[in-house]
View 1 (tube, rainbow, N blue to C red):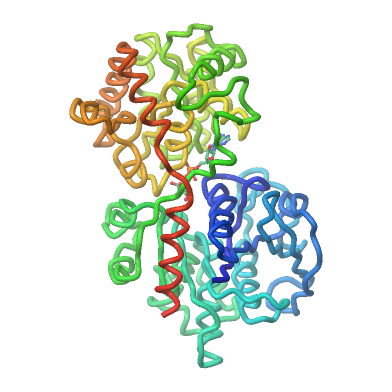
View 2 (cartoon, rainbow, N blue to C red; view 1 turned 135 degrees about the vertical axis):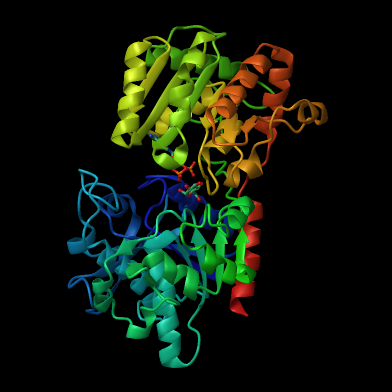
Length: 484
Ligand code: ADP
Ligand code: GLC
């Protein structure tokens, strides 16, 4: 089976969130299982700079958006083949993949990401070198247009070029643009209808993936159910209910090569489920590195997160006093909305030695936080999958999470019955309400006061298997279904 993953980010080159971790790991896991999985990415500066053994594959024929465009092929450090679209007028820009240095989305994003979908289909048509995928697997709205171009090509030829699968990593990001730019996309007018890319008069890239793909996946079984409801459907729940027979939830995995506390080069001490002394060292070093009080017995809470509405971090801000009153400490690594950044910075100023807030994106520090923290907080309003709760478990930081999306599918609360049957691995709260969050924090303190039980729960959390082998198999089944 030949698979082309189409996406906007990829670890280790360019990462703004969990999408990059998935693109850096799932194709590799598929290759281990014998599939020929490859990746197509836009030629952002960090991607072009990282691409190993790069060689030119083809000059992309002149088309609707970029005058100059060359397709390169190279590989990831682990050998996975990667195609990169070098179109400097569209991709050679500062800032993150989607926005400039001031966080303003680039106004021509519809062209930049239309090109990504279009090149994917040119590859599938054999127009760009000899390799042709059996399946186009597009991720999130950035790659969504691949499905529309594939459908259009099939209509013109009278037969399918490749099967298509679309994974929704986050339904809240929809790729919305004014309707009048549709004319630039080189698609027939009837694709801009309610059963196409039109969404309340606008153009929605995500709708292309949802309407035209043979199969739709999302990143956890619970989120697959939630997005069919008005509460979590972001206006697309009707369409998702309509396509329910072709919609499935496949939980993400953890890349064991990047996330292994026994060998992680970012850590000052190493540990595993059998030998945990290295974790105490990681905690002490983290406290020292960040300027927290060096208190081995203070319950240390960590947050590694985009600071956005989705992540529910206003509960952490409002619950802070109670946490600190019990001798807890907090470290936050994140960046995002100015109000949340300011709120956490204020908290740090008010509580020196107990609260440390690092604004920015620092991969190695994130590893040290998972390793040094006792609890990792993920109180999201919604969470399609969530990776940080799984990284926390591997690194012996028990997740404190809201029961939603992938958090509901991965974190088991320390209730008495779950403690009794050995399934407990974190602290789960139900409603997005302050008292529920505060009670979960309280349960963490109560358990921490009973070290033998704490150690047992941590042992179970660290031993949980979240590898990519099972998701890779589940996607294979989906590709086979998409081919029919
Ligand atoms: P999302 O994709 O919604 O942001 P996930 O939990 O799936 O949430 O993935 C987030 C990824 O980004 C994880 O790898 C997490 O460690 C990482 N991350 C988030 N914020 C930061 C940060 N400020 N510095 C370093 N890594 C971060
Ligand atoms: C999105 C979601 C997150 C998920 C990640 C990878 O960014 O917000 O929950 O883990 O994609 O699938």
